[in-house]
Amino acid sequence: MAFSLTLPTASGSLAPYALRGTAPVKPEAGVKFNRIAYSAAHVVADPLAAVDPWLHAAVDWDTTIAYRRHLFSLGLGVAEAMDTAQRGMGLDWPTSLELIRRSLDAAKDVPGALVASGCGTDHLNIDDVKSVDDVIRGYEEQMAAIEALGGKLIVMASRALARVAKSPADYERVYDRILSQAKQPVVLHWLGDMFDPALAGYWGNKDVDAAMDTALAVIAAHPHKVDGIKISLLDKDKEIAMRRRLPAGVRMYTGDDFNYAELIAGDGFGSEPTHGKSDALLGIFDAIAPAASAALGALAQGNTEKFHAILGPTVPLSRHIFAAPTRFYKTGVVFMAWLNGHQKHFAMVGGQQSTRSLQHFAELFRLADAANLLEQPELAVRRMKTLLALHGVEG
Image 1: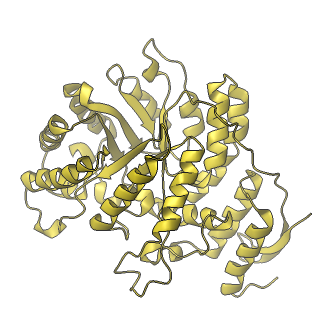
Image 2 (image 1 turned 180 degrees about the horizontal axis):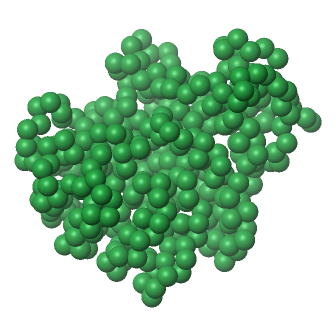
Image 3 (image 1 turned 90 degrees about the horizontal axis):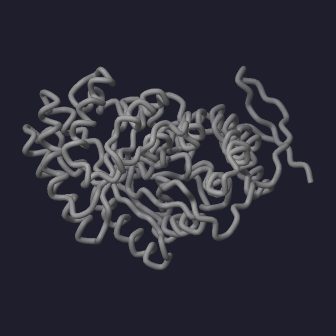
């Protein structure tokens, strides 16, 4: 059955569009991946809560956790309470900790399920942070709360640290304290300023190569306390250069939502396995979860051609979702969940559904179709028409 609708074009006009995609690929059951793959997962807002969305976070817990169970069922781990969950853009620390608790509880029902949770300093009033010691205490507070739940840490980049640090030595001091205390190996988190302008100059230097030297020195001082580092710089050459310099056994978790397919496939460089490929900790995996699972399964079976055939068509969609201003990518992730029937509405914590234009959504819809990512085409068309009608476009 053909499905069609009228969509805005780049010129601002309207044109008919007929779906041409095929049914999404279905992952093979029971396939074990040869990469560790975390999906940073979104939260589902509660649109019926009597709150001011810009000021208070109201979460639909049942639907939010159901989506985590969906990711687990596909063999993907969950990177919890990260920026994809609108951490720092609507989701506060108390709500984040409750999200972590519920996610860890859900994982107990799934043998082998992976959860790593964001540990940061976002509960601090940044105007009250005057020193590196304040930042350390902030990290320690969240660290203790997550570890008390049995959680594995993702040590998130800190806006407070970026603000008060005066040199790379300040970063080294903070991370030395945190890593020395960690109960189990952590994932470090380097988020570029395209994702969060407040993180410009992280690691004490605006020059990325110099910043990388500092991050690598931190890891080299604590190699057994670092599982890996997730970098989101949207620069594949920088990621490859850094992963080749990591200590033996420390993983590179790609956060490059522009180039993830080739980075995960790897280049086979060197004799140390982690130097020649990237594992994954990606926000886009939330939006393309079945395709990501099927592609990773093919890669594990040695079928690199099938891996790229499945994952390659998703890259244009990802580049669109993560287009500048990149920090608004969460809106596209939630839009995909709504189109595919994983939630009943397109409302977001903080009212963030308003951060992208109708043209952006129209192109996202076309790219999702081209990548065979519309799981229920009839539902997707009906919901897209609903959004169009809200913007005065009928047909």
